[in-house]
Length: 558
Image (cartoon, rainbow, N blue to C red):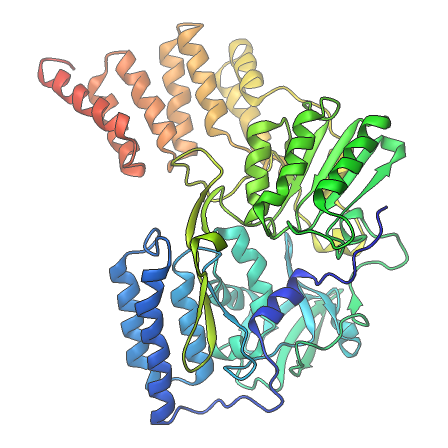
């Protein structure tokens, strides 16, 4: 294993350090005097004036009218709110931008201040759990959170998700546990009354335990915190050296090279280019059956630094093969790390494992060469960070929320406690399997439609296929039935099934319309095309095609 980089902060610590400042006294919860009201209103006006001018495209996901109405409502409500409630409402407005790079942060220690409770939460597949905490809260570690203040966990999650700056749902899933340990956020959301002594309830082995939490400085050391993982067993590779920016280890038993790449940033003692030179020299000099690039914790950095990884993998015929190259992704995979994902999709034969990425393939982001990416609010001294460029790493026009894994591996609380890594288990036990479209078509031809649909249902029920794209396989089954087997009625049934399974897919509706058109059913073709166009109004080719089809229908078509 590689030499450890000097202490590299966990994502949670980095997040809190970016948005918080120390407050030695209790934060006032009373309503504001007139001077404070005017100061908060001035800050709000500054957001309303500056953010639309500075952001690359503030109204990509919401309208100007929605933005202005939200600002107006808050402006009118400020006199009846306390500072924490005003802050939360500002977070709510910014979250509506639906851009993970556009967010409210904190840099000035003299401005609006807030703290944290001494524990770390995590949203596993089976719920919200205490992953780590200060020694005095050891009895809560590993427990499932049942209540936060007077709210159920479900209520708290629904409230917190509305203030999370995000690209997609996975990004929200990352941020919710972070906001739920910030007393000022919990108070502003109405989840707790007393920030100085918040009550949480956790469940341990069927018993509910009430714990009282008192805020601490964000700078309080975490080295002595108690972790939910089993200390008697070795940690999984992804938790072995998480503060090291990049390192690799050779697993001789399985002939696997495991690489963890935690941030798109350089180490002081070894540049990424030098690391990759050494890494790929090792690959060429040793027996390697699998190459695993783990970027599930990589929140981004300077995108150009990814090039040595990309070039090294493209050149390595030894590992750039189906079934040999695996990339682990997850909710923390964001920004420049998503750039890397996009390039690996285009230029390698990687199989992606884990969770969907926290960032979109095509997204708004920050480019320092394109000008400023933040500004201070004049009174609270909060910072508005914002996107100033549009980054395209996916197909032009693709608005996919994330890059989904071909093989899903979602962590449970028990996995974490027992030091299991489902992603690595899937990779080490991987065996190639025929594509869904091949197996479905084969079963249909031998056993009929009912058996083919049953096979499809079994495929979807397997957790490893949780994020598998099934629009395209169903499309291919129908296409082959039409083009190869000339079985148009059965093909149309598959296309109709595809639409039923994916009612929000413009592609599924388009191919159904195409099948109707090819069989001469212009009326149903036009209906399907219109529905497809309603979901994707920017499909300009379909606009022209639909116009021509209507003209044909008017001349006597069906």
